[in-house]
Length: 251
Image 1 (spheres, one colour):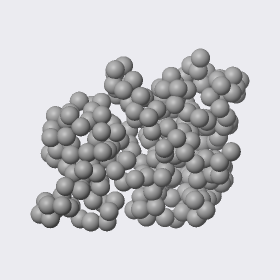
Image 2 (image 1 turned 90 degrees about the vertical axis):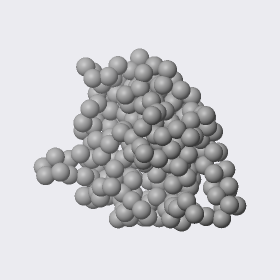
Image 3 (image 1 turned 60 degrees about the vertical axis):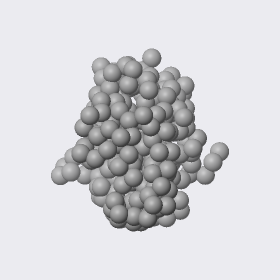
Image 4 (image 1 turned 135 degrees about the horizontal axis):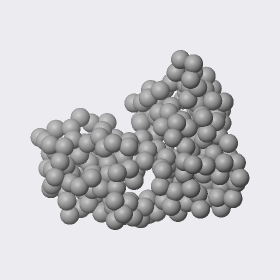
């Protein structure tokens, strides 16, 4: 069993009188794909927002690679290798596919993006960017502008941009949202290729994808983690079935 890369201990997040995260503890192992599932309103996206630094917990702690990062902001977490992708794509639509990835590569290298660079530096930058586009099967679209891509292709590009920051921990917020059957299967296939290479925390409503991809699954209900186990054990867990009654079918 590998050492945890991320440990969440007794995390609380309240909005007024509502507890979106309620005494939640969680351990994520290095290089595992760990899915977070639960009914609507269970606090899944709120949890990801706290892990990425967009929301500060009301109390509790988040320890990443042995460092307490509970009060770190988003920028500091990204620089340490924690990267989140969103339910809705966040790309530069007027730039090309290649330029979007180049921006991420340059940001990871700590340089501002500009088009007037030495030829060798530009070639190296383009070469690195093309590698990430190859990983998500978008090399053929590198010259296209983002607004011309299909929704599924934009999600693939968003994944390439996230990978270009060279994350140690990748937070994926519903990567299959809004996709049709073919696009969904393509994304699942891409994520399978990433398994074991990255630590992935996956929030996703598509249960077929979750059970196909996850090494372990944590189930949230009303902000609490009611179970963490292998996909097979979660499938047979009566408390999980009760939590999903009338909401999601796990079968």
